[in-house]
Amino acid sequence: MTSPSAVVGRPGFLPGPGGGRFVLDFAPASGACRGCLVLLQPFAEEANKSRRMLSECARAAAASGWRVLLGDVFGTGDSAGDFSEASWDIWLADVRRFCDEASGNVPLVMCGLRFGALLIADALRGGLRPDAVLLLNPVTSGKLALTQFLRIGAASELGSDASARIDTRGLREQLGRGETVEIAGYGLSPALASGIEACEFALHGAVSRVGWIEIGSVAGAELPPAAVRVAERLRADGAEVCAETLAGPAFWQTQEIEAVPALPTALISTLNRVISLEAA
Image (cartoon, rainbow, N blue to C red):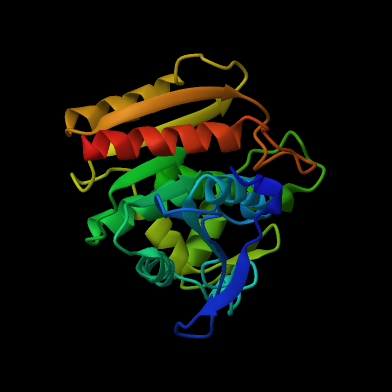
């Protein structure tokens, strides 16, 4: 097998309203293509912290025979637009755009890290039908995710007053008036905020094979209770869930850029498992 370090993503842009969407396209290193993998990134600063790790995963998957597409949705990374101009519907259209680019006569797998899982859920609700879904520490509640992001903004307004109560009502009122709010350097528009808040993770019966990798403090441990509840709901809806836990830092939120060395291998293993299950 080709060494992952020898695999290089081909940069390019997909056309879209408001300008091009930047993508890195990692071709299979050799032999027949085993499938296409679309990687969806986390939200805001978590995406910046995750770029190195996701690129390592993409190279490893390509080295094992997968075509991988890693793209920036509108207003993020190297894509056109400003974050403050983004809306939930624009991002969902970009997800479909990435999948259309990756589609072919091989299995299509959508992989969402953190917030990327919510984009997958709403894309499936809108009719997208991949062969399988892979989740990496998924965010499963848009309402909770939005509240946590707003709390960052509210906390910054308190300055050094650590005893003050963090209250997001002011920011929510601004959004309700149609104003964009600035949080940690990111302009959050009402159109994006409302879309995030309305999204809850569910697969809507769209796929029957799900891979779940949870990174935590102990390898081989059970999924956290909240994740177990979501996985049980997926199974109740008829999905087969292949879950695995890895030990490592939450690289998407660490102060310094960190990595989980075991993640690329685990991702490839899970990919192969869910596609084998689908074929069976």
